[in-house]
Amino acid sequence: MASIVVTGGGMAGLTSAMLLAEDGHEVTVLERDPSPIPSPTEAWESWTRRGVAQFRMVHFFQPRFRMEAERALPRVVTALEGAGALRLNFVEGAPTELTGGARPGDDDFAVVTSRRPVAESVVAGCAAATPGVTIRRGVAVAGLTTGAEAVPGIPHVTGVRTEEGEEIGADLVVDATGRRSPLSDWLAAAGGRRPDEEMEDSGFIYYGRHFRSADGSFPPILGPLLQNYGSISVLTLPADNGTWGVAIIASSGDTAVRAVRDIDAWTKVVSSLPFAAHWLDGEPLDDRVQIMTKIEDRHRRFVVDGRPVVTGALAVADAWACTNPSLGRGITLGLLHALTLRDVLRKTEVDDPAGLVLGFHEATMATVEPWYRATVAFDRHRLADIEGEITGEPYRPDDPTWEIGQALQFAAGSDPDCFRAFLSIAGVLQLPADAVAQPGVFEKVVEVGEQWRQAPLLGPSRKELLEMLSA
Ligand SMILES: Cc1cc2nc3c(=O)[nH]c(=O)nc-3n(C[C@H](O)[C@H](O)[C@H](O)COP(=O)(O)OP(=O)(O)OC[C@H]3O[C@@H](n4cnc5c(N)ncnc54)[C@H](O)[C@@H]3O)c2cc1C
Image 1 (cartoon, rainbow, N blue to C red):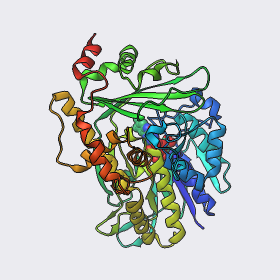
Image 2: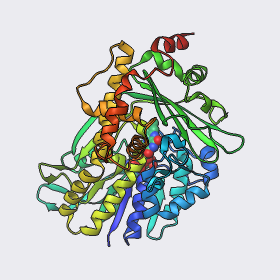
Image 3: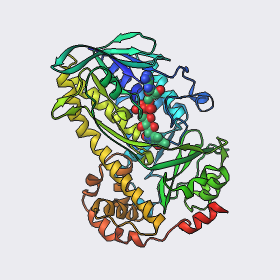
Image 4: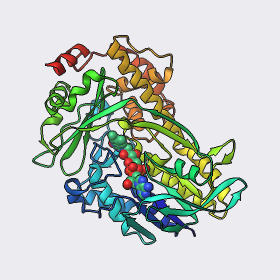
C-alpha cells in the first residue's frame, strides 16, 4: 500500500482521498484554503472558499454521480440526504404521456443534489472521518520534490514542497488543484517538460442567483434544466432544503446582454422565459447576481508519443481537464476519474511508476476522455448557434452530431424512448452515440425530431431581449 499526497481538497481531491484510503493507502490531502469545515447548515452562510471561484455559483449533481457514489461511497449519499440534499427522479416526476409509464431501469435517473457549499461540507466531513485520510487545511503546495529517475530523462516526483518550505514525501502525488492547477509549472520548475495542453476560453459567461421557498418545495420542472432561448440559455437547478439556483448563460462576447449583471435586468429577463419565470417565486439568497467568466476549456495529456512526461504524479478531475460547465458534468466526471485512479492503482503498484502513468492515461482515455470531447463539441456548437442568433444567420453546421442532438432534444418532449435517451446523455449515463444507438431511438429521432428547426421560439426574440435590456 502506498503513501499518497493529494494536492487540493475540493470535491475531487476529497473523493479521491476517500476512495484510495478505503483501498488501504495512507492519504494526506493538502488544501490551501485555511477555513475549517462548517456544518452543512452553516456552509452557505459562512464558508469562504477563495480557492474555488465557482463555489457560490449554481451547481447540480447528475444521476451518474448519485449512482457511482451509492456504489463506492454510500455514506456520502446518506450524509448528503441527511443534510437536506434533494433526491429526485426525472422520469417519476414527468407526466405519463411523456414517460409511457414506469420501465425497468428508470431508477437510474435519480439524482441527489444540493447547493455546492452544502455538498462540499458533507464530502469534507465524510473525508475527515475516513480512516487513513489526513486533511491539512491552510497548506499551499508550491512545487514538487524529485528523486532518482524511473524513466531516463523524465522527472520522478517523490513528494511536494509547501509554501512554508516543508517537504512532504509520497510514493505518489495526485494533483486535484482544479481549473487553475499549477502542475505544468511545477513540472517545468522540476526540469521536466510540460504536458501537451489544449486551452481556450470557452466563450461563456454565467449570471446566477439562488432562491428558497417558504415550505421546502421547489418550483415545478416544466422543461429541461438547461433551456436554450435563442442567444441566451437558462439553468433552473433544484437543490437542498427547498433551495434552487437559476443562471443565465450568454456568450462572453455578447456585450449587449451584459446588462443582466444588474439584478433588475436579470429578473426581467428570467421573467420573460416561459419555463423559467416561475423559478423566481422564492426568497432570494443572495443580494447580487453572481458572475463567472473567463471559463476555460483546458485538457492535459501526460503521455506524449507513448512516453510519460512525469512519473510519481498524476492529475485528476479539473486539474486534468475542465470545460464550460453548462451541462453540469464536472463533479460527476471528477468522481469517475477518481474511480478510474482507484481501479488503476488496484492493478498497477506505485513501484512501477511508468506503468502507473501509462495505465492511468489509457484508462482516462477510455472513461472520461470521451465525455470531455462530447462536452467541448456541444459547447462549440452552442456558441456558434448563439453567434448565429446574434447575427441573424441561422447556424447550420455540416455536422450530423449537432443535428441529431437537437432533434433528440426536440423528440424528447413527446416520445418516451427519446426522453430516456436524452436523460441518459444529460445524466452522464450514456455517451450520445450509445444512447442514440439504443433499439429504435435513431428512427424516432429522425421521425419525431426532424421538425426541430420549426419549433416555435419560446422566449423573447433577440430584438425583444435587447429592447428589454435597454429599457
Ligand atoms: C460556473 C460553474 C458552474 C459549475 N456548475 C457545475 C454543476 O452544476 N455541476 C457539476 O458537476 N460541476 C459544475 N461545475 C464544475 C465543478 O465546479 C468542477 O468540476 C469541480 O469543482 C472540480 O473539482 P476539483 O476538486 O477538481 O477542483 P476544485 O473544486 O476547483 O478544487 C481545487 C482545490 O485545490 C485547492 N488548491 C489550488 N491550488 C492549491 C495549491 N497550490 N495547494 C493546495 N491546494 C490548492 C483549491 O483551494 C481548491 O480547494 C461548474 C463550474 C463552474 C466554473
